[in-house]
Length: 112
Length: 114
Image (cartoon, helix red, strand yellow):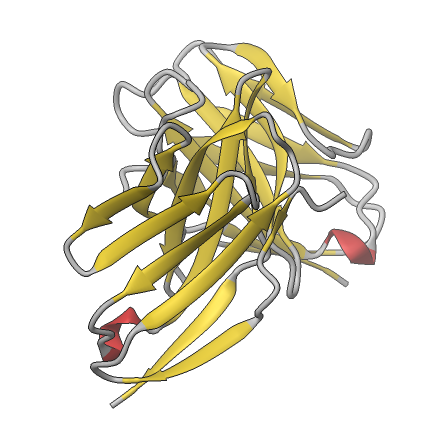
C-alpha cells in the first residue's frame, strides 16, 4: 500500500528553467510534508517542508505547494542548476503514528 | 556530514546468514529510525525507537529485529538472509521523534546477499 506516490521516476530540465516535481498521497491523516534530496553514495538530506495548515512554503529557489483537497504537493525549483541533479524524495507524517513515509523518489537531471 | 554514523558501509554475505548493522545518532538526538531502500524502491520504513523504546513499526520482517541501547546507538539485526534482502539500509535520527521533525540520515549500509 503506497501511501506516498511519486509517479515520475525521472525528470530532465534545462539549466535556468523551472523544475516541478510532483507527489500524491492517500492518507488524509498526514499533516506534515517534507522533501529530501539525495546524491549518490550519500544519505537523503532535508530540503524543505510544509505543514497542512499552509498551502505554500518558500526557501530561496525552492517552493513547496500543498493542495489538501487533491492530496497533492509539488516542489518547484527556480532557476534549476546542474548541482540540483539528484533524487528527490517526497515524505509525509501525521498524527497517529511516529513514522515518516517516503515516496519512491524522482531523479532530476539538470542539463547545462 | 549529517552527524549520523552507520557501520559498516558495505556488507557482503551469503543466504541464511545473520548480520548486524550499527547506527550512532547525532549527538543529542533521542530517536532513531531504520529504512530499507531496494532497487528502484523508495525508502521503506522499518522501525522507530525513541530513547530505548520502540515507538513505531513498519513493514519489518519477523527475521529482522532492532534495538536502541542506553547510549542511544541502535543496531538492526537481519537473520536467515535471503537474496531479496539485498538493499541499502539507512538509519536516521531526530531530536524527539515528533511528527513534524526532519530526519538526519546516515550514508547507509549497502547489504549484498549472495
